Every structure is written in structure tokens, then in C-alpha cells.
Length: 90
Image 1 (tube, rainbow, N blue to C red):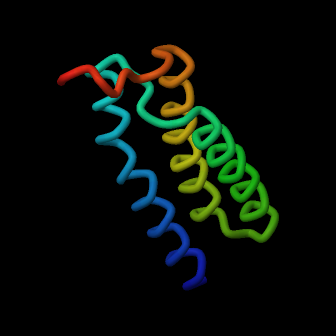
Image 2 (image 1 turned 60 degrees about the vertical axis):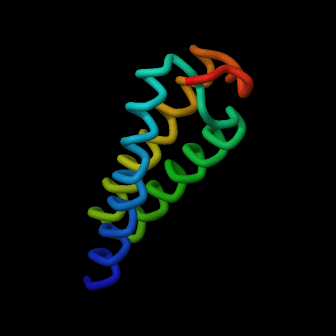
Image 3 (image 1 turned 90 degrees about the vertical axis):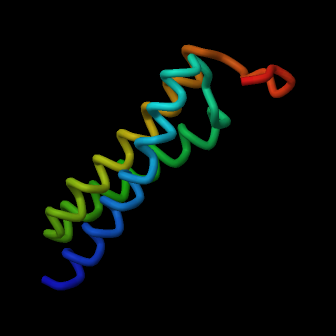
């Protein structure tokens, strides 16, 4: 199904775009996003993945799980490293 392929590519690109942010957060030992943003986005993407599974869009579901997991990592970074200090020089 062409829709599954298109949605899969988009979900992959969204998740792939977060990888530099995740690496940067680990390097700086800072949570660089608001925890509500990470939590709501990851939960929404996991729910979307379940919906895609029920529709038979398996590639889209799997890649939405990948994207949701990237957002979950950003959320967990925020919980682990706490608030960022915007006044601190890098």
C-alpha cells in the first residue's frame, strides 16, 4: 500500500531528525526539551502506532514506534538531567 510507505518514510524522517538532539542531550547532560512536550508527543505516537497496526499499516506502525521512542528518550533525559540553565555558557 502506497500510504503505508509514505507514512513510514515520514515517521522515519521525524525520528531520524531527533537523533542529533538525543546525542547532544547526552553530551551536555541536560534535558533540552520541556518534559510535557516529550511525554505528550511520545504517548501520542505510541497510540498512533497502535492505530496503524489495527489498520494493517505495519511499516508505519513500526516506524512510529521508532519516532515515539526517540521522543521518549528526550523525555527521560529531561527527567534525569533536570532543568537547563539558559544563562550557562557552552
